[in-house]
Every structure is written in structure tokens, then in C-alpha cells.
Length: 332
Image (cartoon, rainbow, N blue to C red; front, side, top):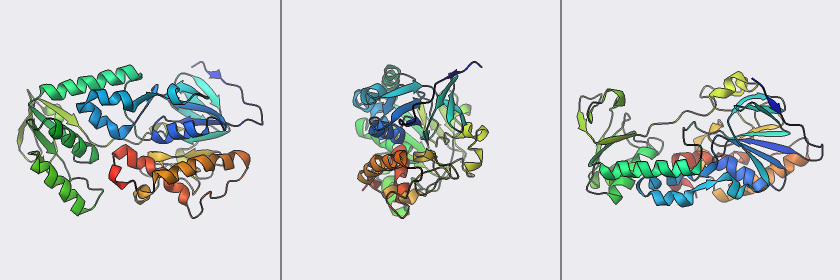
């Protein structure tokens, strides 16, 4: 494959290449664009507020405010609409065949999610999803995590006359939170006439003419369905790179207190792709902004970086785990 190689920068200007245009990557790019030479590599042309996506499925006009072109906020950086496929010591290769030199690399590829490339296509997709919901009398939702529960809630609030069935393979909804909160979610859904089937799964591929069979032997009739199960971590491409030994058993990157990838001085990882405990999700968005503003100026001016907030608080960048799963109530 023919590749295009971008020349290195002058020694007094630091280039920061950010892989991934989700919450963590986009906010970092916006915050640093006047402090360094920023390259944002993302397979889509826009940033999207993820916790608003389910609302946009029932109210597509909502997406007009929550799907934003990267170019609207990244006025002093370069957007590369592509994906990263390889990493060398000081270069990243994109799927378009372009080698991009970096002084600092930030990996923020989060979870894999197949979405359209352009903002217009994404808005059209929401419109189509909305029409699908409006035209259906009965709807099946597969998955009782945050996405499935929230989608069910959005639908029954706007369309209380529709029959909604939610099937979850676990013993309770929202298993990442406590049992009491999980029961509250279940009670609320059932109060809105949502039928919730626990400890069961559905093989969508075996459905026929709107008839679905659960693993528990139950038959569900639905005009349409939505699969709301977990998305894989966006790290499979790293298995053939110099970072392959830095992935843990779950495909997440191991980082230190400064979000630096283990053993590397100029490679960082933020967001869902990092191996950081979920309990840190309760750290506030305000503290995240402090961290993102002060972490990299320190790093860009020194060969060594000290823990910028002390005692491992650099891990607060894991807030991206909150946004990806819609844990709005956990942000203090």
C-alpha cells in the first residue's frame, strides 16, 4: 500500500495526535488546539453527544443540536477522517495510507460503533429510526443495560400506546448499579406497561415475520426490534502494533496515574479504552476539565510528567466511561 508521510514539526512545536472523536478525544482536541499542533483522527466528520442519541431516535430534531461537525469547534487543528491501523514509535498509520508523525499520541478510540461518516447521513439515520418507531405498534428491545432501559423509557414516554417488550439475559436490569436502583428501574418500566423478561435471550437471526422466540420458550410478536447489547472495545487494531503487550485481558490499555500507557513516555490513553475501575466514574466533569487543561501543558514542556493532581487523580479522565453508557445520574 502506498503511503503518504507527513514531515515532522520544528522542535519547538509539539504535535499531539488524538485517535478518536468521542467525548474524551474531542474535548481534549478542543482544549489543546491553541497549545499544540493538533491532529484529530476520527472515522466520522462529526462529534456526537452520546447520551442524547436515544432521545434523538424518538425525536430526530433533537439531533440537530447534539450532532456537531468536528470542524465547528476544531478551528485550529487538523481533522483526518480515517481510522488508525498501525502505530510506530513516533508515527501513526491511517487506513487511508497516511503516516502522521507525532510528539505525543493520545488513544481515545472507546468502543467500536458503526455509524455514518457525515453529519447529514447521521441525521437521516435518526429520522429513519424515528419513523420505524412511529409506524410500529409493538417493539422488542434486546438488552437491559443502560441503553436498552433508556430506549424503552424514551419510547413509552412519547408513545404510551405502544407495546414494548424488553428481554435481558441477566437476573436484573442495569447490573452495574446496586440492586435497589435496579429494582426502581424495573418498577418504573412495568408501571409504564413495559413487559420485562429477565434471564432470557433472543436470537434475532431466527425471527420470522415479526415472531421472536426467547431462550425461555416464550414467543414475542413485534413489528420491529432494537438490539441494545454491549459494544466491543475499539482496541482490536492495537493487537498488531507496538502496544499489543499493553492490552489487558479485556482488550483495554493499561495506564499509569498520568494516563500514560505503561512503559511509554509519549503515548497516553483516555476514556473507555483504559483499564481503569468503573468506581472512578463518580468524579465530576468539572475536575475533568481541570485535568484536561493542565495535564498536557505540563507534559508538553517537560520530559517527565509528575502526577498532575496527585494520588492518581489523573484517572478521572475515565469519565468517558460514564458518557458512553449514559450514566447521567452518576456525574456529581
